[in-house]
Image (cartoon, rainbow, N blue to C red):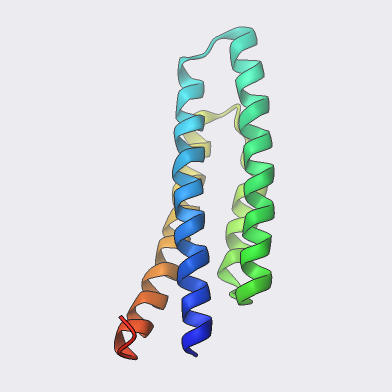
Length: 113
């Protein structure tokens, strides 16, 4: 159980960090116009494709079904609708944060932390 919780905490914290960066990139789209927005949204989309791969790795390592839910959310974000994208990414962040807290609590209760 300890090994699983360490992995869950490790991957959750990593994904939280990456998602914060991604959300900042999405927020930056609000200030772009025309071709800048078009180019920026392509870059953001590529970032989140890579993020989806990271989520898949986290799922494969932990087998935690919540990572599948995060993957589904991120895979279906329309970055042209910035407000809606931020809302959906916020839900993904909430799920990942819950994973981290669950693992942390288990490790703390085990006397590891």
